[in-house]
Image 1: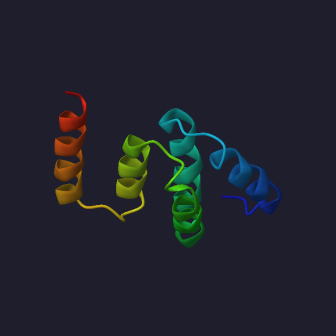
Image 2: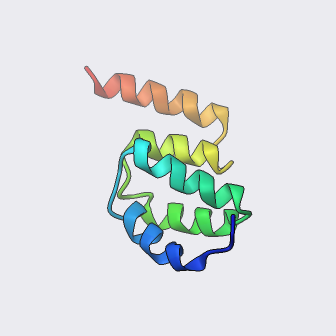
Image 3: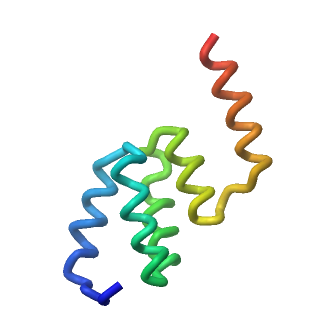
Amino acid sequence: MKNYTAVLEPAHQFISSMGRMKYLTPNYQALLDSDQKPLAIQWYQENVNFYHPYAVLQLGKLLGLISGEAEVEHEETMSFLQY
């Protein structure tokens, strides 16, 4: 929020190496809170194949890229995979 750009590259490296929502959400939320949604979407798209499917869904919702209908479809797929 203070436009301290020196943290951007370390944050980018961190979210590209971490797949847990516990650590990803605050970083993506900070990007959104500081009006850097395009950057957040770019980083999300770079890592979408690396993140766990649940993280992809939740972050996609946070960024406004995934609707509620996609969530229902995802939950049905996940429940199928559990059996």
